[in-house]
Length: 329
Ligand code: ATP
Ligand code: LTN
Image (cartoon, rainbow, N blue to C red):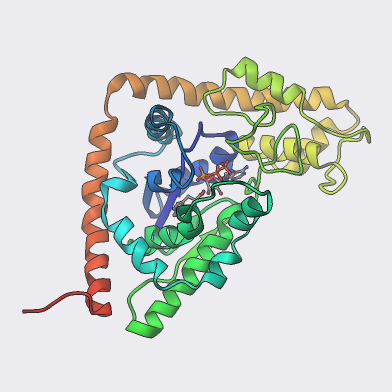
């Protein structure tokens, strides 16, 4: 069975973008692949997080993983810091990555161009830790949203270079980007990705949003003045995004949805999108509440970390041996 691995960095509440672009796909893949998913808590602290908020977001993320349908009997679910090999291989990967490569990472470039102050060294070397996350497990596939593709490609480059220098060690992973929903856009500004760190909160639907609030956000989503329901991503990006959301969640094609609403006003289409989204949120939230009440999270994470460590520690040992870091008596 091929192995698949992915992580989520819960620096805030998980969003509908995370669900459509990543989480939902993990659930679909867990039957056909050996699935490993983790909460990337080390990645969270590349920017300051209030400790109380961080703790709450980490727990929520695990509960939401489960609520969205990840099954701990099929997938290995764990917290990154419970498997120490991540940080250690992350450092080794940083020693095998060039500054020029990190300078090209668009996520970092965007942040520095925005003139963000106090950017940390951890944020800069983050792709090296992400490479370690993936390579420790010999993952064949890495399902991610569009924004993470570049980081997976860098992981491939680092792995290939390492294999050339030290001999065949790492499996070269492939990014897996879904055809629909790989980049859900903000409802208030469809030129931007729907993001947890949305300052206004209007453009982002959180998985734990009250469905009434989510409906309001959808009904007031920014569209255009063209007034025709059709698929024109360039000129009607807001409308396109809404149709894409509904398509991803209903398993209907975008064309099919356009056909149904052809000639109608935008309000009617938005109402449909809101129905589809709210139905999904209600399902997720009711399972989330059950999971939070059942206190099973700690046990699932401990079990996951045990399974993950068995794989990761073996890889790290091999890497250290190949580099010549150990002393043999
Ligand atoms: P931020 O929202 O602060 O930019 P993030 O949501 O990208 O952070 P993660 O939680 O680590 O950070 O993302 C988890 C997964 O969700 C990644 O695979 C990412 O590509 C995907 N993802 C995030 N936002 C979207 C989106 N708007 N559309 C589709 N996929 C997304
Ligand atoms: N960088 C990712 C989260 C992440 C990840 C990973 C995803 C950390 N390590 C390994 C896939 C595989 C993000 O910011 N969304």
